[in-house]
Length: 188
Ligand code: PRP
Ligand code: 7HP
Image (cartoon, rainbow, N blue to C red; front, side, top):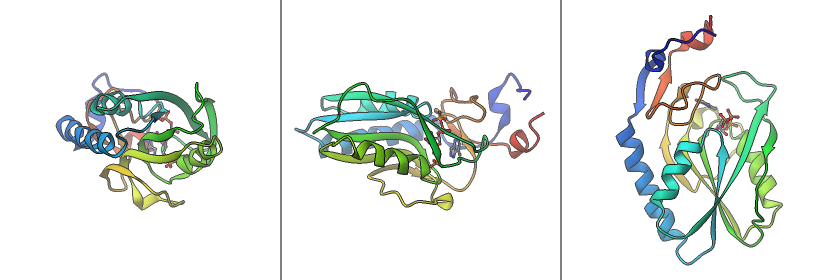
């Protein structure tokens, strides 16, 4: 795949600006801080996509938290379609037994990744398990997911930036944009 040196050239539309994202992160941080005040909260970031969101959200939360990182990848799909077959590449570092756990995701699309992860983490006996996602793309949902904290609902378009990738690129954009369809329909 040939990529132009200017990453923004592959973006057809800025869906969420840096300012919109940062305002939403502050709002989510305030809500989470209020809701979990006085409780033992662990934030579990689902790498790699949630990395920028996690970094910003944890600093918008004003109560003490522990953080942990998991890396999962879906396999057997394509660069724009997840398969639902999830492989754990990095597991939790600490026990979540008896702790309140908040999963931090960048996007829920089909819901298959989180469906797997929720079942997996429930098996580790947390006191509670809730979900925070920056982006929710409900048009493509295959399994229902109860979202406790949602940043933005987005249309059925393939988006990149602020952690989200196509072919591992574009994660370092500060905004969320729509990827020009030519990039994935005609990758050469
Ligand atoms: C992306 C995203 C979610 C998942 C959502 O992860 O970060 O985890 O897809 O899709 P779904 O709801 O259809 O399952 P991906 O597997 O691409 O890994 P990444 O976070 O490393 O980009
Ligand atoms: C996964 C994913 N990654 C990047 N952009 C999207 O729109 C996506 N949906 N599911």
